[in-house]
Length: 230
Ligand SMILES: [Zn+2]
Image (cartoon, rainbow, N blue to C red; front, side, top):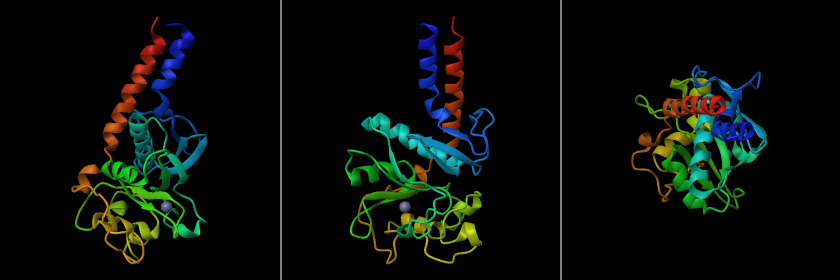
């Protein structure tokens, strides 16, 4: 391999590693010394920068890799976390973990099933109440008695109706989309039963952040070897 071929190969290997950056400086993550799961970072995707926790960024990067491997397309992000001002979202995107996405060319309910199977608590949203999209969030690790306090237990701050207000107010002050998700309900006012597919064991689908970080460390080592090869 020529030097430029080695550089191109290393860049491909480091693609996912480089899509997550420190929030303030924009510098790459040292995957051997990663930030805490709830540290705010930048997630770079399709020329845009999103603000979210390190864990939420890693999960979205993982979902995108899985989607690329399965369908050869990238996840299209319509709205990220830490985004205020979309009235129809009712504050659910004001803080961490919550995304509106689509998978181009893939049936909405097939996409929903795939995302649910991979730790994204989500629903297809459709007209007339919404424009077509999939609204959802990175499921936090399952802990303790209450499902709604799981974000707060692990130090993540999410919009009021995502966890009923636990992470913002330390108690339940409204309805909770995460408890609706585990209960296979709509995540909307009315909380109707959702008859579409859900994983039987939802906790088993929760994103494995440590495994993701371990793969990034390996990729960084591989890229280094490629660049250093004579
Ligand atoms: Zn949304």
